[in-house]
Amino acid sequence: MNSSKDMALILFPHLNRRPCLCGGNHEICLQCKVCRFEEPAQLPSDLENIAQYIDHTALKPETSHKQIEDLCTEAEEYQVMAVCVNPIYVKLAKKLVNNVLVCSVVGFPLAASKTDIIFEETKMALEDGAAEIDMVIKTNWLKDKKYKEIEEEIEIISQLVHRYDAKLKVIFENCILTDEEKVIACLLAKKAGADFVKTSTGFNSSGATVEDVSLMRAVVGFKIGVKAAGGIRTREQAINMLKAGANRIGASKTAEIVTG
Image (cartoon, rainbow, N blue to C red; front, side):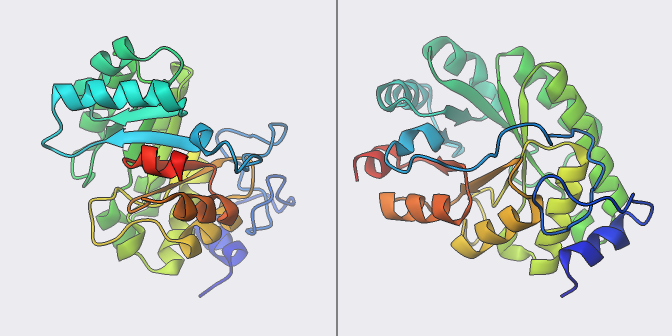
């Protein structure tokens, strides 16, 4: 596999060769759409208060109104960072939480919709009260090396999200990607203005791994977030993800994680 720096130069041949200021192992400035050079490091600092890093999540197709109510009650009880729900439940979740952010997924879980549809889905979620958007990258485009199209789609959604003072997380399906594709996806997402990169939807063959989190953190540096999601069910698993470089955990088993 080529180094992250070599891949960055292949992806973006006209880059200014200035040193990277965000700590990524691509080593050179990607000229990101959103420069976070002066922002604080997005690294976990308190592994005892693990709830502050959790997106308490309910995304299954059978998720009911009552389950969203329970999700929000638990989120407030444990003081997690956010609840993560499908777009149809954003308004409800926004009404039910006070001290917790509302996150919504778009293009989920396949990213099979056209960009303008994902744009409208994102806009509606933001207007309904979402403070964070988790957007799925088009894996088929990545496999087909349509890197310009991927960067442009992320940038379009990123600019929309930031107009609402919200944050954008870009989801990869790491279990079906090579390490080189994971690096490329991280570089594209970072350059296009994403606030986080995320390991998986949790709807494929496997979810987050410590190795993937470590790789993603190394590539993007410490100025944007890394979210580990999919299959995290215990406190030990969550802490291992945080130690590897994640600063957000997507989980439905929040009670078990928080209470140990």
